[in-house]
Image 1: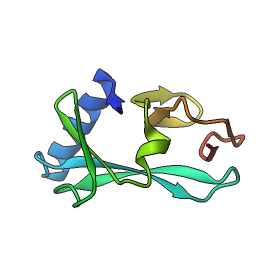
Image 2: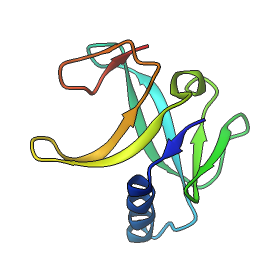
Image 3: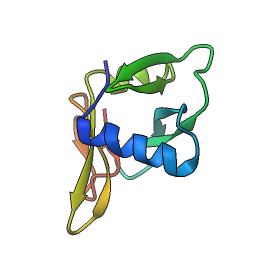
Image 4: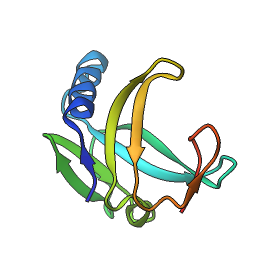
Length: 108
């Protein structure tokens, strides 16, 4: 199960309205790359793919492909404001064993 914090859900809702896509869901993927091996990719999606897990959290549909689902199990997505890095979505993932120095790439 993947969840959104209330702050993240509000930000997703606001961004969907700004983009003119109020019914779209959020695609969450784990992709190869980065110095630790894997990173997260988030984007808009009109509908789920045939094999996707569809999770609803805080009124937002989350679409997760079968490859990414095991890596994301138990994760929480938040929206954070950081003085040094700016604002953005942060994934709190209990499956991460280590990450790179900048926190953008993870080893599972």
